[in-house]
Length: 412
Length: 92
Image: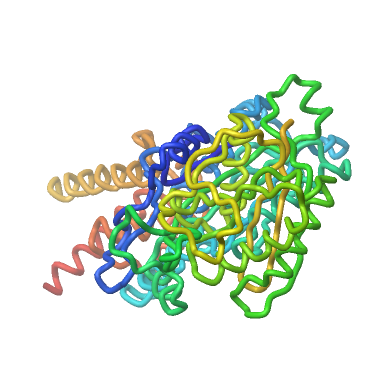
């Protein structure tokens, strides 16, 4: 797996940050925030995001940040997987023969893509005139370019798919990659999500929706599940995984971090931008059924929980519904207090955290939770890192437009 | 005449330096007769468009699209930039 976020540039950085209760949220530095009420973000340290020489080096520098972060995370995932990477000689080789079996594929979830590039491009056009627009503007911002640069840099010649399912995109991409492998169409795929939209129009757009936290202390916001939660904090992140057919992985002696055992995605909401508890619950139940995991065998829910008043409450209601009647209830946790809200990368970031939880048998804490919402009193929310048996984790991601997606990841 | 030759050489050197900056590569192999579209390693049609925008900023000039599209050699670009600079000086 490969991760880059405000806590660092490795899955271990993420995990250590989660366990230590480290907050990746701080003053926003990518633009002047004086006109905005929300002045914080969970930003990636760009000095960590570097690339070895390779194809499209020139173009990659001109890509919107989500492309670079996705490629960086994919590079780390491939390194971690031990899959043989295309060499420079391979890249220079003649085209593969038509009967050459396609190897891997790329499935990437992206919600808002190159929004910073769009905004900068519009401003440049209006200030300097249309002819000063860079010819790389459009390639830099189209959502597929994350999957495209990954596929082209690594000469992955199966399909490259980009899922635009708002904040459920990354979760859906992982699920569709899983399906492609289960069907036998692919033996392996890179899958995950990326988002980097720390740009003024993101802030004005979400402020208009009253979605951003107005808290003036970055060490206490966002506060998932807290009674004083008041909105989300924009986060930048990419998390990409090598998904592989078990027999294929075992045959080459790969280290297996966990097994994706269930996936479901469905549609439905009562409000265009809200989470519908009944639809979310149905999605979670379907994912568990797909995994053949009973609700009371679910050890941990890695929630979407962004720190928004209604969204957190709707998700808790859905969890309550799914786990009703079970002999034991899952512990629920949210990483948003550490990493901010990373839109399409939410589900993949949750998956990275869940894989580390499976490895270490520890549920990470919900950071910044001081006083839980009294209406969540019947739900077991992880306040501190908890050493416990972790066999199956449920991962949630929900997106505007009534898009729900859940994954189940189990101990390998 | 010698002054003009010195100025042309200076302009050529400056142009090669800026092309190298833009391409992030050593392009000291370029000669006045080198073809703009095919002699610069790693060049593409999009990069050429952006290179010209970059050179406009470097030299503080605005190129005529209809003219630069027809320039083939590095020397053609040197001549064009020199002419624009001269025209600018006359206007000033």
